[in-house]
Image 1 (cartoon, rainbow, N blue to C red):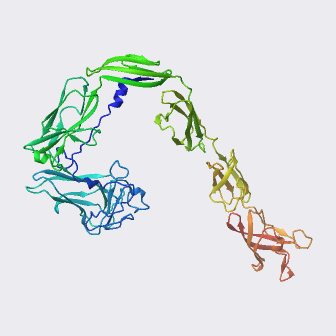
Image 2: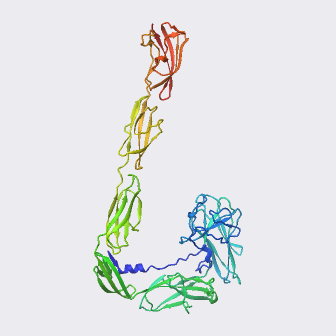
Length: 621
């Protein structure tokens, strides 16, 4: 790996570029925000404790969510204990994690929810009034939509129209000019829609700024000059005729644009840069209509920022590299310990003398120590990998994992089975690289075997085969009996043809399923005697219904008639194959005459179906 001098300089040359957004009505540059309290400030507490008293007709509520006609100042709705189900939860519209915003639950009647007075303005001067507004309702709720009016001195100047349920911040605003003699205005925001289901909103970044012509510093946003080069001139470019007597004040920032200081006496359209020490310099100018307005912070606009980089005459670079690496200075490459001096000519024509103090250290043989947890099941992505530490080498360490540079202490979760390449590098560039493997357990499966065919009343044998211990069984449809404790090896009598499905969970929480088709042949196994001899010899002494059990579950009714149709015997709800439940060949205690008799019967089968039977038989004596 080679480190190039120009790569280092490119890393140093990260420039500051402020972003100017032109809102409705103002086509030129804006001044600094006059209304500094318009972002509601910031704080560690989720809810602002003190009542800011900024919303006429609304009540401040410290326990969110605010009810109808109430408002809350908060830095994060996501930290609330609870909120309304139709509301989204979000933070304020800034990069400050503690920045506050205003959350308003609309009153049942339209009304003013924000009002502030601004003093010390300039007459006959254009200003821009904007605010960020967000509909709190979730997308698709279709509730009442906020409709916000911006007013100056109780006169409506602009209306947002319906603020959509788009779950984003929307910037609204307008520009206006103060009248002759007008130096004070009262700003207000009102909701035109009535309360009810919806019409709730959040407000942030209320801004009130002077608006003027387009004020630029001519040329590129940033320039580079040589430390010992010729002087350079910055030139103001004003595009527009808003100011009939433009006045300038050049400024310089010594903290990368955070604060600005006036450059004494620099009030012309140009500013000359003479020889300066190497480094970055930040410039801008203030513009107003006349010197009186220029002195008033509420009446002037600000140009863009120009960053000037003065390329140093001499560079001194101190670096330590791992053996096997090298450092490039121009066309020269160095891979040993020593002090090296080179002369370079930049693309700007600047001569630079570079002194490189390089130390090359032996490769200590880094060894990364990972904790790995394989996926719990073959079809899951819940594996983990964590770099616990690095033996040898000099910290801090950097880790490349999942093809990106990662914090060296990060836990990586949600990983499927795979081989993962890694590279760990110490502060000098010494490295350890390789791969770690996350291997899933053998796939968990269950097998119910081949489909089965049984006759009605015969058992189906269920034998579950699996390569892992099954912790729970769930059969679909639910079996009508409890197979515990061994639901993996049992038998039952199916009543109808159906598909039995098993959903099983292993002791490791893995899931598997299988199905089997059980076909039931509905053969009715009934035997109806054609004769009997009630002679007391113990053989065939009664007339009864015979059947295979449990194919035949019960004889619901058996009635016997003589040849003239007279009923001679009736029995109900008896078991099949039971002689005691049959006819013994007597009528009222007297032997019935030999001959032919007629019977009817109704039989219940194991599948719940009942069928009629009839026939004749002979009584033999």
